Length: 483
Length: 94
Image (cartoon, rainbow over all chains, first blue to last red; front, side):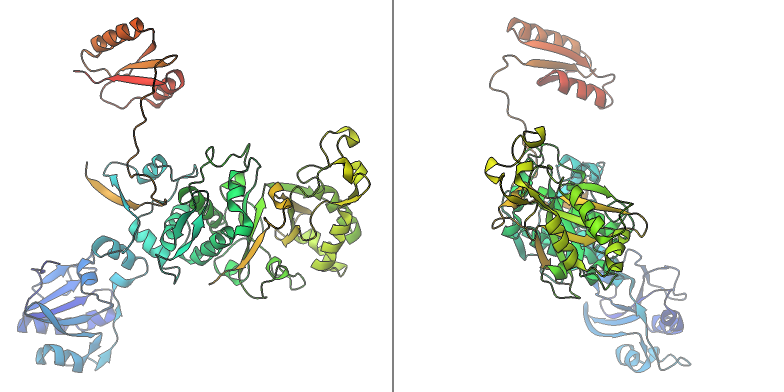
């Protein structure tokens, strides 16, 4: 950095702001030091402050405060030969005398009064100053956008978007996003298909910025990505399938509440930033880092709207309900992500069943339609149980395990009703199953999760992906989130 | 143009920062060439000559013109060219 000609090579510098009561308290001290000189006061908010001082440096841009690494105001610094030789922070008469001499005695002032935080270290400001004046230490290559170009349009033109506008990934935004995790920016999280490209924490942060995430979502985004890259999830296959499915993200545990995720009214719909952007971040990482582009490796015949984003939290407010993550082996009280190969939301209406037995039969009828009413083991499912439907089970003393067992039994059918041509429909199961009783799903293939608004005898069925039928190769994945 | 904003690349950086130009087609057989006059003076003469050469070679052409040379082509015109032709020649003459 070139020498700052507005600051004395030999003398005092005070960094202050009018908004700080301690700075205004010591205004007479600054005037006294100016008379003893040389002195420069760097002011962060009001260049008319302090009065009676000749060399006031307007630092509303905060560049000098940043370069001097000021954390609190007032900060008093003594320079000799252009080098800092002494510094003190806040008002302490003894310290100020040591650094500045008797002109800093401050007669009539209290012995000690703490200062205020420097504007240059306020949340969000510091990262902007690093991006503007410092070294952001980002490894990703910089892409210049022309003075007259719209950065959002530039992102579209470079193919970085899922079709909706993205937040331009500027250095200050990326640095703020990286502040949401303790993990190093250069740590490789994994290889993202289809190109099996290494994805660093920094690349995750860039795509999280673009998706619209807040920094506090970063641990969740990282956990979601790690789950997606588990070989058992088979992300590559899910990406290139002609089927509808894409990653469905279900979040459990305290982190969901901490970042304000929605598990209630409209939980599967729009309107919640965390739900919307965490699911989107995963899709943008697959697109941008992995190279998974629709029409290229993504060969979906139709796709589904959840491929923009499909993420929600489970309602864990009822202690009678065992959360999905706990059911799948995560310790109670821990945060976790479950990734499922979800197609889309199929509404289930039952406003008449009043007993658990009735409702199980009713749910089974609807669940049997997943994929095709005559196909079994061609994909699993998620059942999103609404509060009013859950209440029918809870009030009868049922818990998750009993409901799962009852549904498993209710989802068996005679093979003769399902084989090719049966019921006048060509689609179906091989004739060899005609004499067998067939399960619709694998024994642990139906994931039940609670969510939704208090009113409405509606639940939701989210069908899975036929790739799930090879259980040893492809399953839903649940992982703890490191927060 | 000066750069006023810098973004960071969200991709795995396996492609260049600048998009490569499309490679010329190996043959013009069966293709339609758009001839666009951007409205500068003598552009029409240039397009007329090109049209004659293409016609002599048996290559189909279609003519288009920007409403004014001072503004970028309207989106509808670009969409029409993309829908009706596979190549384009733009007369930047003066």
